[in-house]
Image (cartoon, rainbow, N blue to C red; front, side, top):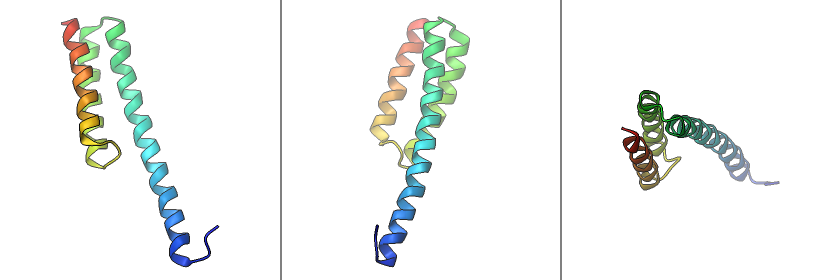
Length: 87
């Protein structure tokens, strides 16, 4: 364990940020799974609605630095491609 006050603070801050990032990643994964499930079920309306929500969540995560902007963009692009194949 750290002895210096600033090092102790860094440990606490890192823990807090890690928990926040985990929560955001988990939330994004849930939305992405909803899109995948709708695509597999071939439900166009549900897929489009889920895609809209997932895109929003991914953009928020990217803006907060949880995901790199290119990673978020790639994931969104792949989901769009999958949904567009249905239509």
